[in-house]
Image: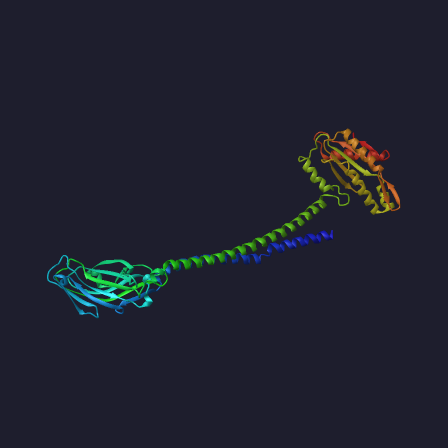
Length: 451
């Protein structure tokens, strides 16, 4: 008893410890929450980095006034026309055109040859050209042409690296810097690089858009600047995407590790809880048995019998042919007085074992008190009950019990009663007990049927 009590206390204490020892797991949940927060922050940071591309500093190459290789004015007066052009100041790329009347097919402009240093051999990093012009005159529109090429070593044909720039500008647009997108060919192919004699050259043409109106036109080219990105947008998106993906892979790996540790921890806790639960269940069943059974013989005690009786007969009324056998061991007090109570306990245990051999599935064996037992048999006629009682009496009489160096025998007197229709248990018990009394009166070791 003491050992079982200790076991129950230890199991309860261990379960309490398991249910309340949540600190490590709570830390894992907190860590998991932090990881999810990092995932959200990384996504926001990636979106912000993608959006920030337009605010990155630009790469510029200022061509004018630094890299002018050659410049000349062209006008239709050179071929018989009426428009005349002259330099105001060639070094400042300032010129004027004079037309006495409006000319539908006339022309007047300036062609500038630009040759940047070798370091700027590839125009592919630049996406736009910005022109700063000063114009005064009656014409409403100007035209800008830009053509970049490299001169090959062995052929007369140039290799174009920038095409498609032929832009018409309104006079009002010239009042501020004009930015025009350009199309650039890369000089990364080996066959192109091997055929280039020197760095790229660029021809820029500014002229009046026909028809040329009558009057004096003055145009000065102040500045030409190429603008591009230090890092192409596809590279920037690739770097940001790769960084975000790498972070998420690390994040997912860490999250899987946390989840795996959590699952392992929960599995261990469940295993321990299951283990201790089985112990508690065994203890519960044990104490339930102790509360309803006699610990010495294993038969039902009166409390356990009352519970079983309510289950068999919910309305407390007996069915027909319910037999009750009241069994009393003859002269049991003499056994205790002669051989001691330990021997008496052995006798009770052996007698109970004999009685259990005659108990059917629906029968109930009860230790009613001391050396007295009660056997309730359902669906048993008076003849069947008498046969069962006689068989029990004979088996008990034949039982040989060792008491040290001596042997002893035991007999029993049995009173038998079978229920009437809807009879209560107390009435049936009184009739069976009276039959038992008669059995003792006529000499014991016999079976007597109730009236």
